[in-house]
Each structure stands twice: as C-alpha cells, then as structure tokens.
Amino acid sequence: MASIGLAASEQSARGHLAMLCFSALVAGSFSLGADAAQFIEPGALNAIRFIVAGGVVGVLAWRFGHLSRATFVAPWRYGVLGVLFSIYFVTMFEALKTVSAVSTAAVFTLTPFLAALFGWVVLRQRLSPRLAVALAIGAVGALWVIFRADLGAFLSFDIGRGELVFFVGCVAHALYPTAARALNRGEHPLAVNFGMLLAGVVVLVMANAGAIVGTDWLALPSIVWITILYTSIFAGATTFTLLQFAATRLPGAKVMAYTYLVPVWVVVWEAARGNALPGSMILLGMVLIAIALLILLRDDGAGARP
Image 1: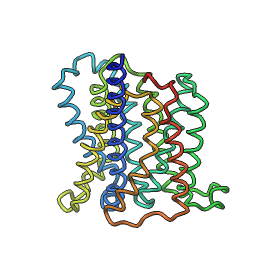
Image 2: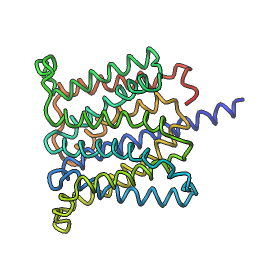
Image 3: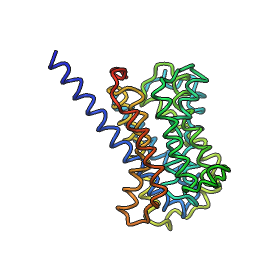
Image 4: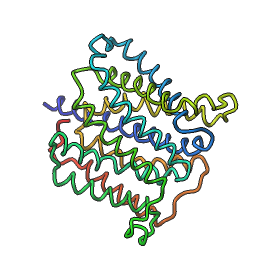
C-alpha cells in the first residue's frame, strides 16, 4: 500500500512539474509577442505559426499512429475549433500592440472563470464552493491588474481597447474545451489538435491573404521569427503535450489553477529581458491571483482523481 501511495504521489508531482513548465512557456508567448506584434499583422503571423505548429503536431500524430480516415469524419468540427483558436491568437497579438505583456496575461487569467461558466451552460458541469471562491478571487485580481490599479477606472469599468480586444479572444479560448468535448467522437487529442490547426490555417490564410502577400518576410526582424518558432513549438506543441500529461495525473481544478501563475511568469520573463516591471499597486492584484492559485492547489482529498 505504501508503494502504491508513493507511486501516486510521484505521478502527482510530475503532473505539477509539467504544469509549472506549461505556465512558464505560455508566459513567454506574451513577453515575446509584445515585441513581435509591432512588426507584423497578427493574422499573417498566426497563419505562419499555425502552419509550423500543424506540421509538428501532424508529424507526431502520424508517427504515433493517431491519424486515420475516421479522424477526418465531419471535418466541420475542426473548423469550429480552428476558428476559436484563431480568434484567440489573433486578438492576443493585436492587443499586445498597445497593452503590456503583464496586463494581457492578467486578462488571460479570466479564462478559467469563463471556461467554468461555459461548462455549466453547455454541459451542466457544477462548481464546488471552493472552486467558485478561487475563481472569483482570481477574477478580481486580474481585473485589478487590467485596470492598472486605478480604483476609479475599476468602478467605472473603464477598460482599454487592447484589453477588450483580447477579452474577446479569451472568450473564444474558454469556449474551446467545452466545444472540443462536445464535438469529440473518440479521436486522440493529437489528431484533434492537428485537425484544429489545419482548419485554422485555412481560416487564417483566407481571412488574411492580403496581409500575408503584402508582408516583406525577408525584411522582418529576428524577434518575429523567434516568436513564430517559439509560439509554434514551445508555446504550442510542447504546452499541449504537457497539458495532456498533467491532465491524466491531476484533478481538473488543479490543472486549471496554473493559469493563474502565467502573469507571475510574465514578470519573470520581463525582468530577465530587462524590461520595466509593474508598480507595487499592480502587484497587489497579482497577490490575489496567487491566492486563487493556492486555493485551487490545496489538497482537500476531493482531488484524488482527475
């Protein structure tokens, strides 16, 4: 019995380590994206990014035997998922033109709250009181950062255009898990991800053909190509693998909790790159986000199964 308990504890620790890496890699996309967004249209950037990521995921899915004719039955399903993810990434880079990486990451922490809402509306998934409290605290902390610690702006809901644009993307991102679950017909996650990326390429190329053709790709600074490769491989294929790995070893609420760590990692990324750090009042909002993380990570015995 002791060896079984030790093995379970080891698997749980590996799941937490995977999600720790997940949150750090996701944060990097905000930090790098803030620089790259100034040199290229978001639609053009993401079209190339989806092509690269689709190639990587497609090779992995084929290599492990997860692609078959059945994968592409009712391809419209991947179109829905591809549109949702395309909206998320395009609005993210559009927002990063005018909004700091820290504020954008704070908007991202609203995703668990939105995902829980969609899960309840579409799938009738219920929240535990502890999860509801954690999501509420995290949302308040995120809003405090989004409104730049300005109580007047907070009370009047004076939100900036960039934050509002990315909020639309976060709504699409939050709807993705519910849509993926509702539309899944037993396909392996790698196959679904490949189909989604393939559909996303079609959507992005059709919607941004002018921007793609009009971009002088050879004249782009290196930060754009670094961002494309990073978001395709590390913040794309790698984070997807880490998420799937952790989801089989941790309860869903604990997997979700690591979303709240992204703004903290963004601050680390920004500090490492020599960029300005947020003021002390904004850090108060990040403290609330950290409290939400701790509540969700607290082991209360109910989280023994994913």
